Length: 289
Length: 158
Image 1 (cartoon, one colour):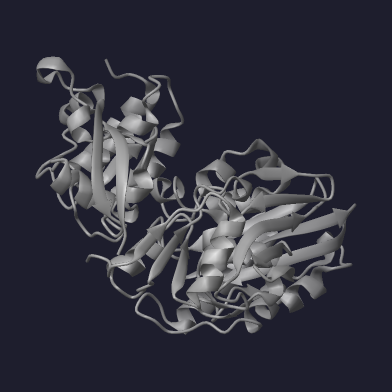
Image 2 (cartoon, each protein chain N blue to C red):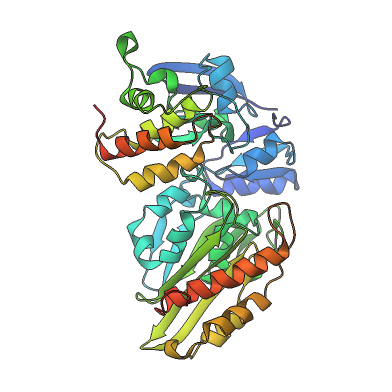
């Protein structure tokens, strides 16, 4: 339970960190909060030659709220985001999800960028990024690029980010001030990865739904955008929704798996009920009859 | 394999050492500094026994490198009791509410409770209770820990 030897470096600038990654030719691993990486190092499932700690890079910390978007620097600690009044007001689904990320003690060190870049398919934050249509800002010595979270994940723990790239900022687009947040998950114990979960936001103009962003966690090899559900909701009057049919549609888009925690069938059954309950609650239609 | 000179203030004492990059804060505190009240349980972040307070926040010391704690102020369970062994109020409360038996998880439990109730003002009991989900205890059935947490949150500790 001790990591294999590595060189530990804690650069003070992003340029320095990027140069280290470029020179390492894939032999370096970035450590953000370390709350997922440290177990992998201790178990020797990860054995980098160089560990590049981003903690002291000032530009990777902080939350910047603008009229049309909220940019969260990648090293923002999960508990700092949880306590942020702007995020509580403008991105309530993110804040609800944050309460379920690990435990209080791990959220004191765990970061938004670390979780989103790692890409655990049953984790909350990657699904939030996909659901709320976040844009992920990546940087390497070669330059910067921006990728939609919806195009970022390609498999379990696999993303389109290259080994020499660092996720610097998560940019959430503006959601209307009165949008309806959606978040719920089913886990065996608090702090465990979810067996199934659904997260997102719904905007309305009067009774009519104008925009929906929703994604599943734990229901496939990556966080899964609920595309069909989003489309079915858009333009519909909240009073004209058949919630049972909507939940059937939502679950038909998932591809859950069997593992030691739950069967795919359980995930489908529980996820369907969860979707129906969350959508009813969000749209003000009360409990499942 | 890098080595690092680190400076920390641990339980009020200045400390300077040279550590290998891969050494966890748990192992550093136990083996280099001698604070064996920091319990190494699962060593991968699941059990909470190794919890210490780093710059005012309860963190898992097994999920942090000693080199990352350079410059930090750290409190371990050894730093809680006052002069003459007078128990800290979270220690007294856990004892009063029978929130411990074998004591393996206890240092971690104490450090989370101490970090969250350090201001001495009432805080949301549900918040403290939720934070206790980060600690596994195989003896108490949790009810004693839960009562202690709720009383500390309410600020009824003497």
